[in-house]
Image 1 (tube, rainbow, N blue to C red):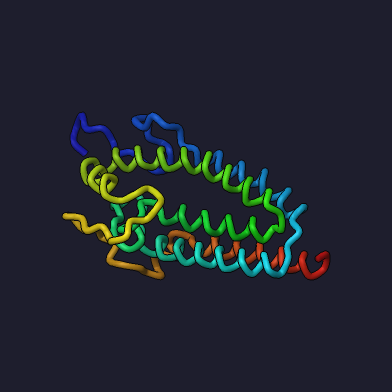
Image 2: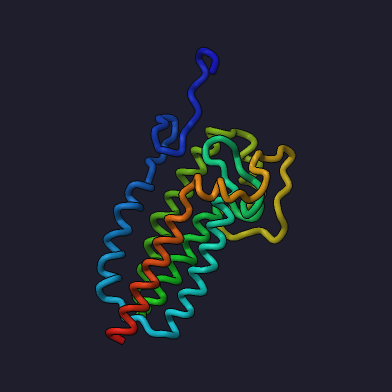
Length: 200
């Protein structure tokens, strides 16, 4: 870095140039305010468990594909699922959360989750877009103008400058600790299935 050049922004929230405060710590803490009452009051049924399991499975596949492709902070990933949506990890999280809460047996849980997701993830998307703009400049701005934040485009984006991802990699999947999402979803459904069996 040359003298007088400002340091690049970072996705850990430590960059003073980014005007939006990092909302991810709030997201991590606030989610437990929903998880604990959900686990206590959930009343799952076999049919809702099956539907929720299918939705969560789709979400895990999307997240796994994204986590095995993205190289966080080191490069702007535009290949794989990132050629269709800028935030496939959060798209996957939506399906996982919707699946788990739908399996909870009452409409209130998906409604609460959708409200939480819209409010918290909306701020997260805005924050990360600003950070990536600081990191990658015109390259990200071009990507942003061609690829939607959430809802996927029908054809893959083909940038002038390719990323270094080189496709999906299990090593990258493990490096990004995506197994934690799989473990969390499996634990939630095992708990709900046990509750349905014993208290249903």
